[in-house]
Image: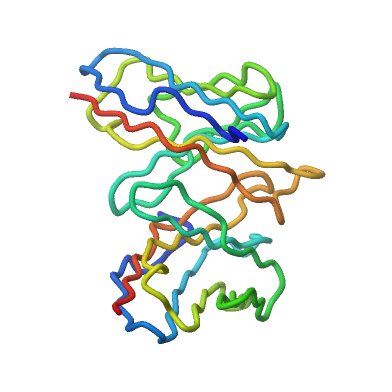
Length: 117
Length: 110
């Protein structure tokens, strides 16, 4: 079972370049998330999509855009990369019933390590 | 200001001891609480969730919730070296997303 698949796993960018991180899940989950993780900062929520066709900002949305392409795919775009966006990015998905994540588990991808020079 | 606070550690305990990990949160409306474990270089994985005041036990793990004091804790009994990892506390936000703390690094020495 693939679960949550992220591509690419590693990427080096120069300041000002753009790129898109891809995420796909095969568990038929309705909610998907993008987090970033920096040393000593835990996981910080960038954007999430509670259901197909909807997206919402998280804690640190500035400098990012997202697209919920369909139920399976949720992409994260950096339009003009900055060194402050050097991080490990995790995509996750979950099943949310009745709009509530009370007991739902987040399933994470393996992460994408991005370095911006 | 981070809504979920944890001591970053490291918390060091000898093998066989009880490890106690604590977490406080600021939003009184939070309904459900989660503990994730993350090994170095790996993705987080769910250990337990809790949404009622009191204790919830699962094997060597016990989650404790006190909504009046706005804290949640995780106890690990009979700690093993394989428990050495970063433990992330998370709370439900707006029903459909989790907000994580910075994590506490646990080191269990044999």
